[in-house]
View 1 (tube, helix red, strand yellow):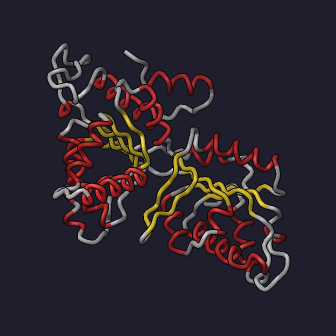
View 2 (spheres, rainbow, N blue to C red):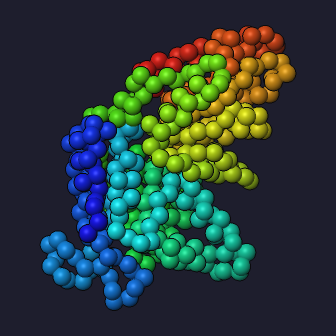
View 3 (tube, rainbow, N blue to C red):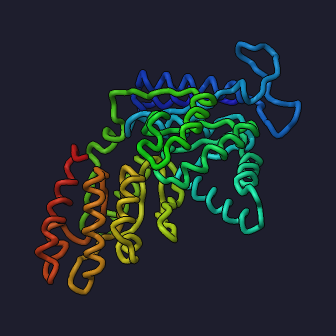
Length: 364
């Protein structure tokens, strides 16, 4: 049997990379049990499903005997980190770890392609393709805020579960709060019942915000620009994201907003990508709602010549500020000196004040 998440967790605690946390340890034990049950599991091989090893002797088991896990709790409690420990060693050949936003975007693309091919039920081929490529699906930050997503997930996951797909997911909300106050929510409630029937629900109720601990001592505003500032931002990414990022795709009316890198609630992109492009308040609000930390590279000096970029930057900072999103940034100058002169310099003073406030260790 391959090493499971419990051994990895203990190694990290022993090395000092993690602090022992009772709530985390119980979550890891649940993930370890799932790891044991998945040994040899492959629903694509009829008659050759995994063999139970703990509690069932040599009895053959099916997907209905293997509950997944729904891990929810506040930000910084280590949900994504624990799921990564599980996923890395999960004894399943076909497995996929993906942020829930990115997953749903790929589902929408698949449905559009199936409709273009004349499918009467476009969700069916999309679900079948997902199941063919992954017997284990691990989602980071499951949340439903869009009515289109809400109307799709019930039938999609019903098909995935029927195909034997095992699901592990993290979320900031308990299942009963998904799509809370959403339009036509009564149509969404069967999906919640599916989740509670097929996944064990565990509240990671730790008193410790481990992400906040990792932010202690972290420089959050680096000036001037240059290799030293970039090195600090790179280190911040490694500490907070703890692994390679993936493109974050946020559906917007008629298009998709793409953020260069995202992992574990941490996003990273450049000033040019976010403020030189024609983005608006809705884009920045959608970004702030989807992330917990933004690492922003290369804020230049602002002036009348960069008036449009400056306005977008002001709107971005407002969205981050109101959403309590931590900002780690490199800039050409200190906040009060970023917009030294020009028509917008006076109005920029409020943004400079917010940038200074957001630098404090206990902000957000």
